[in-house]
Length: 189
Image (cartoon, rainbow, N blue to C red):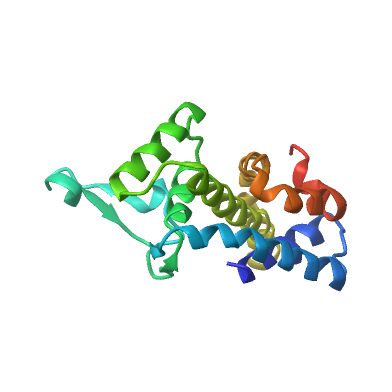
């Protein structure tokens, strides 16, 4: 998870002509490593990492949960259960109503046998914050490295999700780091 945040440092920062010094990079890694401590409260589980609406399909002819088809799971690994939930509720390609987010998190916890409490909400904020940090760099890299400028249209939504994650106390030090080193991530597009 730490390595994935390099997309922000290497691509997003470059796009805004920001130079991240080695000292700032080390501080960034240290802050994220400290934030990841919230994940230790819950057992890890299978994490698909790219879990969003475009990778889900409704299979009408099937029954129950077998009606949900899934693609793009080749990068799955073990991680905190909040990661895929944040990926789904903070989709970079479509808006999910903020009125749905808390009820969906609560339902997820209920169905997964997890306590819907401050510990889980901190883990959700950190998972979403990490994911959106990575995704700040994704559209820039897609454009500059793979000649896919259309992905830049995703940046405003990513920034909104990222800024929302940073409201949580678990990410306060990371918010300060961004204010100091990469304030462009905190500005509306």
